[in-house]
Image (cartoon, rainbow, N blue to C red; front, top):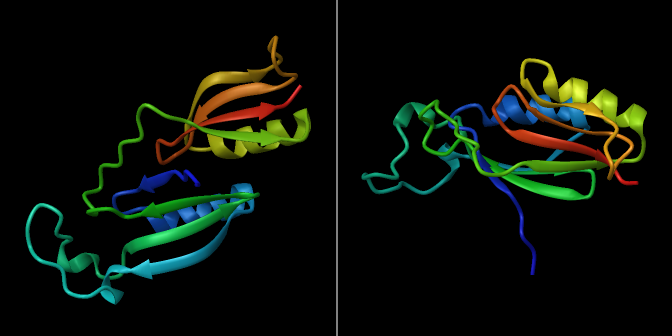
Length: 138
């Protein structure tokens, strides 16, 4: 059994993948656009015709982890609430580099610093609103 996060970027999925490629060394291992899918029925889950080039499904590898993602219904209002992605790194220098990269255009939720459980831990929401906990294992 495997549990994987599935993120809906509501129209910014490819932009997010490029950003994670630059900041985290992510690799897109699979990408399917809406135009590649069979015709879908209309209704609440329908995607607008102008979204044909948007991402229907993507598999993104970051380190040893695979994150799944999509543009969802392309409504332009991603909402990432009630969870955070935890990024465990080897040392404080790497934590600082990645924390700063993820925070560029985002919002620091807890500054990176020493805690009772880690030599370096911080929380930041990136420019897409995805919350990250950057952590060095003690």
